[in-house]
Length: 315
Ligand code: NAD
Ligand code: SER
Image (cartoon, rainbow, N blue to C red; front, side, top):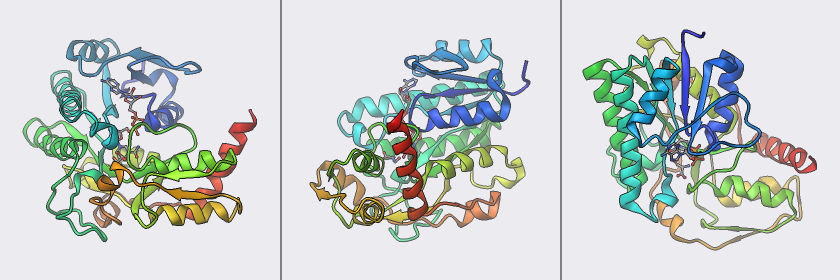
């Protein structure tokens, strides 16, 4: 049995789907326990049904598999969260406390807790938003992440739980679909393009947001988790940057490959969420501490997204 068994909570989500496979490849199929609310057909590996808001179920799985690391990916994201603010707060905070407490009580050495650009609000400088700045999130999702960052630092300082965190930008990948975020448009647009359909964008054409290609996001997650403990100086969450673009710019990058692709703009409530988020991020601290460096830009990401989605369509 592996000495360092890993539990992934929210393993069937947009990030979990890809991260689970990568961790299975690195550590072996038996070393990774995937969990989510429901099973998913076609999944191979160890799987447990888990509602992470249920402390006893979570603890039973951690004890059964002698878990030593947790990747806590379950959350209600920004756009969906605004449909039910109090429930979102309840769920996101309950999940976070359960994971941190289970880690404290069961000698789980390391935890990954993703944060988000949603922790920033209109008091932060939107261009190259600094690592340390005033946080006034405008969504319940952002409030739960900002609070979670402080709790992560508290559990590290008070109990020595090695919780590591990244403020992910919007994540774009071909492997899985996003669930309820404001940056989801930047995934859906590629699906429309390869199906020969026009795209109706829920953001204005000049709304610039920080984004990252899935491969870079997964590599960053594994790199921060594997970094020596003495190199982790930020115990709230690290800013992380890759690329920034507007809906018009991503559409133009698609038109270079599909010249007939068309986009229309019909901003809805998600525009208000996006307009309070940073346009670009200063991630120099992550670069300094654990050598973070993104590899993909908009052009290279678009080429891969379209190629991989076309291949999937042929199957
Ligand atoms: P997602 O919504 O695609 O996946 C979340 C998964 O968690 C789903 O499979 C869902 O079934 C599961 N889940 C929900 N409630 C649960 C519960 N009570 N118990 C167990 N599982 C539950 O989200 P994602 O995009 O994969 O994001 C993963 C994490 O990364 C989240 O914490 C999110 O806030 C963070 N994040 C994501 C992005 C992004 O662009 N995708 C950006 C910043 C931060
Ligand atoms: N991509 C996420 C969202 O849009 C940000 O955390 O909700």
